Length: 199
Image 1: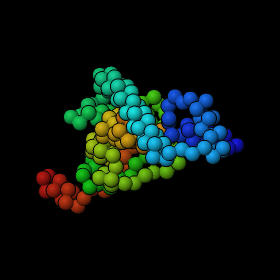
Image 2 (image 1 turned 135 degrees about the horizontal axis):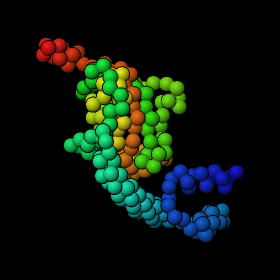
Image 3 (image 1 turned 120 degrees about the horizontal axis):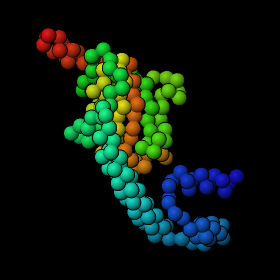
């Protein structure tokens, strides 16, 4: 049981290729009370993790670049100035969110390989949030979707979680794919008044 939990810890931290002989030796040394210089240990670990994260970021960025190049050629896919890609799946009632809007949505988030990392559908629930409180790709992308509509978003790492990643599944440099249904949007009063005065 202890070994299984330790294995889960190793897996969750994504250490990459490991020497199990060295891990075994480290465990034996710890049990035997062998002294280790903590500063050297932490410096070594930090250096390793920085190099590991850099390698993962570069790998994911290369995969994303290839994906976006091909995806942008598909029918209905629009590439914006920021690098965001989107496709309108279903039109809505014409009302779109703006800066400062609060939206209610159903959504599913995937990695480019299809791995689902978050889904309001699985929770059988909706989500509400301010457009200024989410990743930049969401903040921009939902402005293209009408209330009652559905949109697909392909978000570059730079508009998502960047080099730091997020959680156990979203690695550094990961691009993300979202399916979003915009159930409703509450737009700031000033924007609503301006739109009405322009009519």
